[in-house]
Image (cartoon, rainbow over all chains, first blue to last red; front, side, top):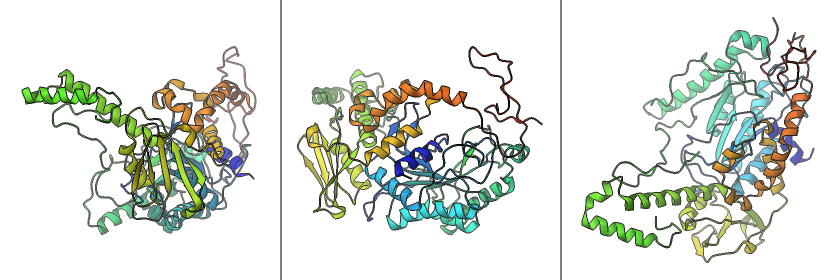
Length: 267
Length: 229
């Protein structure tokens, strides 16, 4: 299948995912590297769609093929949407090409579940690893974590990504059993707990003091259920970079006298 | 502030300096008209610099003499003199690329060693669209949700004056023109039936001109996916 046709299908399949703005990434540049990319913790909206939404990341699915049959999802097994699948190399090349043109801040990659959770997660991780290690890409990477993926894969994902997130999908165990019978609430929570554990290990290893980064989040407290595509409820974890400081503020104080001038909107 | 396009900017600074010389507290007076004018201009310059980081579009030009064989060239028309101010951002982001930023207010290029400031350029010096750009246009078309057209928000965030140098802006008019028809097609399309034996309750049809109580038949699953018990 032609690349442009695949892109049309797999961007369309991801368009209902409310993407995180690429905020919170540790500040870095490509000055001492051999590749490209920088982040400054605030992110940039490079374009806007006619629906008024910011286009900041290449937001795509690796594949919209899925073995699950979640009733709310446009990509469920029984849906009649056209299917496509990128190769790992295609996603890497697309990300780098868009980035060089200054069209995006980075990649937001999710996927339908193909074969099994570990295989799917491995493909996602391989994209991030290729970008970081083979191309020294220093832009923003957000990976969706596949519930049920092995601990080792989640740990590897965290090594390369600025942000990991996992879909809780539905607010109650009953609704999950009824509408997404292939999903396992226990596995979703275990994945979140593992990410938390790795973050804690890293901050302990770095001797960093654990700073409150976000309000405490109980695993069973999502506020609303969306009837959107792949992800119904998105839950972003803290960036797995082991940072001990909050994201750097981009505000520039122009004056010592109040009121401080407000900076331009950095959406 | 001195990057503002207004030719009056140095006069304004001089007037402020004169005012401060007479009374240093003037800088701390939030209602001081001179100060307000200066801060507003500084904000406008900041805003333009940010938009330049966002809306610059590099296009590749083959150059066999370079590593990677490509030079990346962008044409941008900033309102204020922000080119030199923004150049370090692109240097830090695209360190391994050879690139040039052309604007009517001066140009900057990077070849891996140092930023080189050059004279003003014209649009004719910048490269046109290449084949690779079609992928970006395809992406912009696909990421758009036709059921949520919001041109006011679009124009607020991406002012129309930038559109002529943004390749994706050519897609806005056709996307908006087709949006209503595409939305209608989505609403009219029959639902696909899940594989499991779901018992689906038909949602009341709330479209104008339809009988709200008429059953939509099998497959009329509502958007919320409420399944019958």
